[in-house]
Structure formats: structure tokens, C-alpha cells
Amino acid sequence: MPAIVGLCARSGARRGEFRYGARMDNMDLQVLRQVQQWIAADQGVVLGTITRTWGSAPRPVGSIVAVRSDGLIAGSVSGGCIEDDLVAKIREGALRLKLPELIRYGVGAEAAQRFGLPCGGTLELMLEPVGPHSAIEPLLERLSRGERVLRTLDLATGAVSLAEPQAHSRDGADRLVLTESQLMTHHGPQWRLLIIGAGQLSQYLAQMALALDYQVQVCDPRDDYPWTLIAAPLTREMPDDVVQQLKPDGHTAIVALTHDPKLDDLALMEALRSQAFYVGAIGSRVNQAKRRARLKEHFDLTDAQLDRLHGPVGLHIGARTPPEIALAILAHMTAERYGVQVSSSAGANSGEAGCVL
Image (cartoon, rainbow, N blue to C red; front, side, top):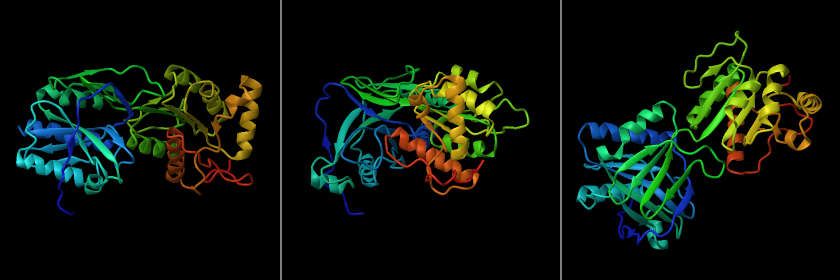
């Protein structure tokens, strides 16, 4: 990697308030755990959070990187060039911060090229010295319990407060907010997935969804389907009751996988009336047509509500095995989250890959 010069342009006064979509992925959770280990070993640490980008960027807003006082690094906010510059600054003693500081990388095409950003791109990074006031340990404790946490950094003092975020909303549940006095970031599960059915496919779907930071719950009232995935709790209540208790919002997905109309339909009749961003059900096109007819006749669902049902569920990628079908489902959920228009199933003469029942 070539030497880096013209390192960064420090930001001016922060004016107004910025809100950007952001989420904490597993990589960032690992960074926080590493930071806590460094603090326990009495090491100095600087934590950096991406607060804003212009143009495309390797990591999303909200991503974090940590640099130890000796230059050891955890996490990533770019393709490596910015991390190298931070390490160099730490070793040179140029980042002996006492309070949070906002810096920008890649201002102008020449600097952007040096830092591995697109031509003209810019990345804004909030750096904060980490200590007991940073509340890393209590944050990790709450995250280990599956809680969602709002972390607020006071830019004048460096003090951190933790709180429970407001209820989910499709537009703002996982937004990073930067004002002249505070940086607010959301941590923990930002998206929820309810799986109806505790079969083998559900096991794969739950495991993959957990890796994508979904908060997963499984519902199956049938006692002959055991469940061993502790991170995705199982309830034996009836599906319609579970959906009502969940109060699905714009950050909730519901997928019915039992192949039992008595169970799947109960969940779907409630899910399709909710604000859930994704509702899907396994089964062939023939069975999907029968399901639509049942839901319309017996549960009075409208055509508009029924049109929200993704069935056969998942993207048509030729999936045949349970893990492949789980991958197809999560790929389609991801596309729906980001508003990407994709084909959700096979052609009219084809059944669902891996499922002809």
C-alpha cells in the first residue's frame, strides 16, 4: 500500500442535525468486545464511528473501528487506508484525545484516492477516547441480553449514557443522529424475524438470521418438533396469538414454514394485516393459490393485503436444500429491506425450488 500523505481535513463546526441509516453488525459487536478487553488490560483506546459519507463507501454509517495506544486495530471503516492513517497518528501521538473529535477523510478527488474512497467521496469519522465514562461494559451486558440500546455520546464531555430506544419505526429505528452536542447511535437487534415452524429449514433460517443481527423468535405449538437454538427462543403458543403479541412493525418479518394450513394461515391472517415489511410462506404456486383463496374466504383479507404475501417464499435461485432455501429467503428479505426490486419466485410453470408440496 503506498504511503499516505495529505492525511485529513478536520471538520468545522457541526451545524444542525444529521440523520443517517445505520446498523450494528456482528463485526462491530466484536470490536466492542475487543475494546472492553483492552480497557480491562489498562490499554488506551480510541474509538471511531462513521457519522457521514458522501458517495459510496466500503462500510455503512454507524460502523466502528478501535485503535489501541500501541497501534493495534480492531474493526474497519474503509478498505484499509484510513485505518493505516489512524494507526500512524496513534503511534505518532497525534491522537492524544481528551474529548471527542470529528474528522473528515477524502475531501477532494486526490485525497479520496489516497484513502481508498471513490473519486470525490468523503467519510466523516467521530473519534472518542475510551474509558470508564464510555459505558462499554454495561453496553455489552445489555446487548448480551438481546436488548436494543440507544448510546448517547456527549461531545462536550465525552460522557456516555445508555437508554432504551423508542419503539421501532420503519424510518427511524436504526438511525445515527449527530447534533452539535451529541452523537446518538443504536445498538442491538434492529430487525425482528418470527418463524412459524420449528423444522430443519427453520433451524437454518434462524441461524443465518441471527448472523445478520435479526432478533429471532420461533413459534410451533407442535410438541413433536424439538428446538435447540437458545439464541432464538421457541414458544408453543398458537401462531395468531404470537403475531398479535409481537405487534409487527416496519422492521419485522414473518415467515411461515410449517406446511400446515391450520398453523401457517393463522399466522398469515394476522401478519398480512400488520405493518411487517416482509411476510412469506413456503409452498408451491398451486398451494399458494389455494392459500390465498382460503385467507380471502374465511378471514376476509383484501386483495391488497394478499398481494403482500411472498409465496413461494424467497428468491428464485434454484435452491433445493434447507440451507439453500434459507439463504434464498434471507436474500429476498434483504432486498425488501433496501427497496431493491428482484424476482421473488420461479416462472409460472415452476414450483418453489426445494418444495413441491
